[in-house]
Image (tube, rainbow, N blue to C red):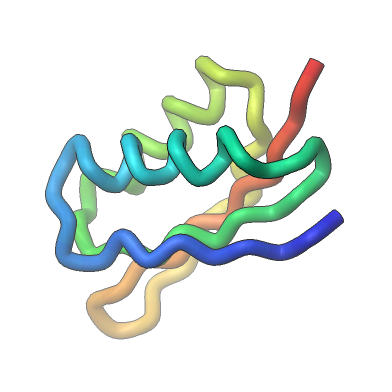
Amino acid sequence: MAQHQLDARYLLCPLPVIRTQQKIAGLDDGDRLEVAATDPGVLEDIPAWCRVHGHRFHGSRREGETLFLDIEVTRP
């Protein structure tokens, strides 16, 4: 399991989700991805995307204007 980061700050919907999808495509099962974003829409969009694609969303936190979302890559 490896830890990865994605900087999607200052991107507006749907770009944070698209960048997340692109990044996860190159990751292995069990890897973790922390997405940094400033668009508040990611708080709904990324967990929904994870549910649709079978990845585990482990929550989010806010530091100032930046939101951090924790995703675990799960592959069938």
